[in-house]
Image (cartoon, rainbow, N blue to C red; front, side, top):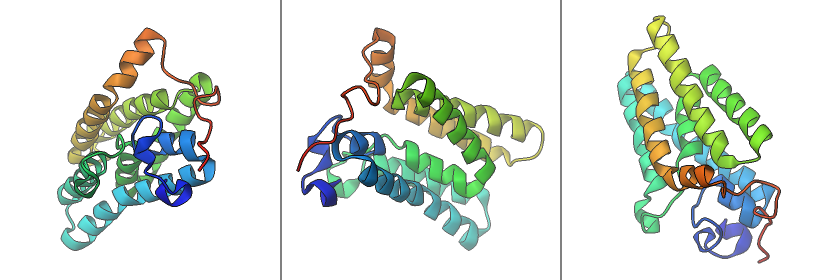
Length: 184
């Protein structure tokens, strides 16, 4: 956001550094770049952890640390995004088909509701349901299912204000004036 606007993205919109705020304040190109970086930020520690330690638990711990670091970045005053794209990156690195299913469920939800928060929440439910089902069937390490439960619970915690607005009927929709890029 800073490279595009020459201003701190946290001074606009929701005050978050995530893709939705970048989309609403800077436009689709910087949002796509931000999404790519955030997904990579989640995938990298998982891939490195698996390579160095050959241990799914270590890889998931690295992914979890990346999500928490995105939400509360030390070098940005502990003011980051909500962690959704970074969490998606962690799951993409551990099991790409799961991440694509999660993304697909989220895209369908945002297509119906035009609300980015609903995409995140529905994608999270899909992640827990799919990882749980695969783990119960013996097709996925249990630690990945437990990771999905933990990271989705964390993402829901980060979305409490959005959930309250959804319940009140005041959550902004994409494409309805709430995502007009800022000039700068």
